[in-house]
Length: 156
Image: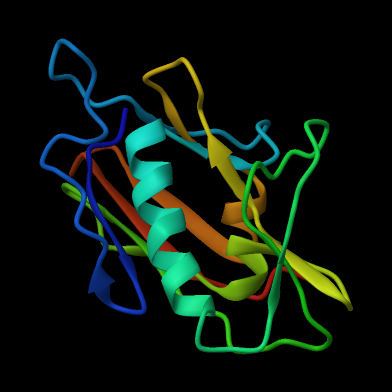
């Protein structure tokens, strides 16, 4: 399990309470999973992140879309043609360098719309860094140092 100690949007801390990713027993519940298609966050973290992103996108001429129940993206989709001013989203982990998601890893982007490629984990205390968020990154686990490192890399 990873110990996520914070998140930033464009280098600004989103204000998560201490221990936001820890369970009732104070043990971190954040994993990396290449099988999970998208990142899921505990509800409190997801709400904080989406509120910051909603404020960020207000400055642009993008129109928020209502999503359907069958959409993997729960609440944060926008209609906009050729939008390119996406913020960086960064996870801060204890004993690891920061993991910064570039736009193509943080958002599902189409020509006329984009959605945050993350959702709330609903009723679980588990957060998962899914495959979409890991795009174009190398993740190295140094077993001897007990340390994770994340590096951007064009994997196309």
